[in-house]
Image (tube, rainbow, N blue to C red; front, side, top):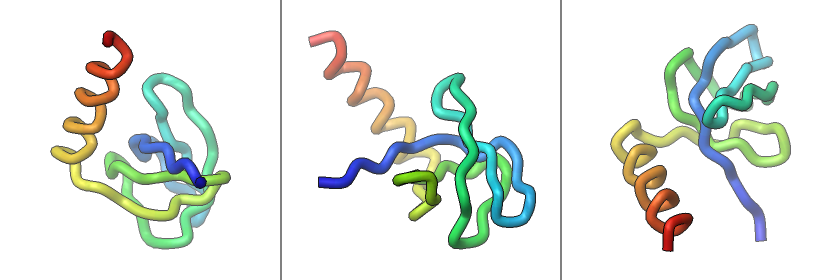
Length: 69
């Protein structure tokens, strides 16, 4: 099973991207065009997809609910 982690794009420098994962910033490589502020899915250092802001917020809320139960 693979795990993709969502984060917000902070900085784009060509294919090198800085992604914020809830306060922890990591570098990733973009295999598609991304822009600052977009929500992306990162797996093994590669940006493998994008999701909409509302889906991201819903996922965060569900994670919060899981962590408190």
